[in-house]
Image (cartoon, rainbow, N blue to C red):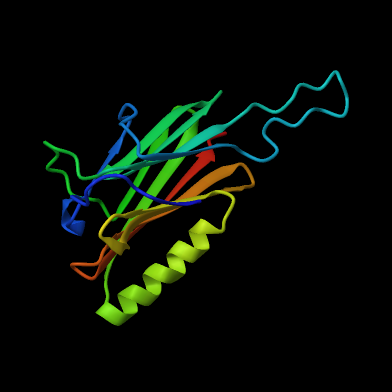
Length: 183
């Protein structure tokens, strides 16, 4: 899903992004709710209980993104945004245990030439806009200023990738997060 975010583009420096776990829901400009495939299947045998549901919400904020995951194992909330009062920079890698999950986060910042940036931005927006588990929002005034998110589910792990575009700097911030069920 691709949308134009109805807010001024104020999140203007890649270096201002911060990362946080456990933050309450922040006001969102666009939201995509998903129940992960196979997590609520009706059992073929009535005596076998259905698999527990895992609900994921991708949230585009005026200041970047938030992912909220709720499951019987516990809740995980990841926020990557320009947060007032936060002085912690965006980490390049983190591994934590959250309730019944193993959480991993990785971030990378790419600096691209103007032409390469425009091509990469268009490629990412097309990928996410056409994906059933994708959410992207462009900011008014510059179609290359965007935040995009893509959710996947593989073998008991929940994965999401995000991209935050800063055309005025020629910088693209890419993140990858994974939640795996802890035995």
